[in-house]
Image 1: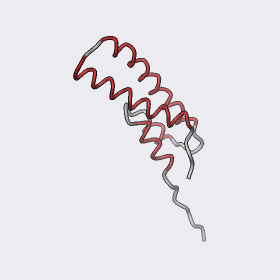
Image 2: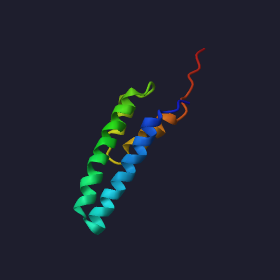
Image 3: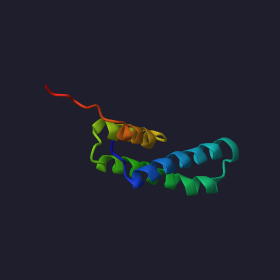
Length: 91
């Protein structure tokens, strides 16, 4: 089992958390200051998740594509990267 980088784990949580803040602000308060502060943070976390996933040694194209899902893509990529790999027995 491979352990993903600390950068990927932190960016995935930050992406999800910032999206939750943006959506709750949109639904309840709708403050421009919150959107202006958290919006770019969410965008940077989203891009870092994709780049960090692509840099992981065991990530394939499907894992990188999965990381591009907004909001939960980082967590889905982490789950795929930490899943145990099936062993292939050769006769």
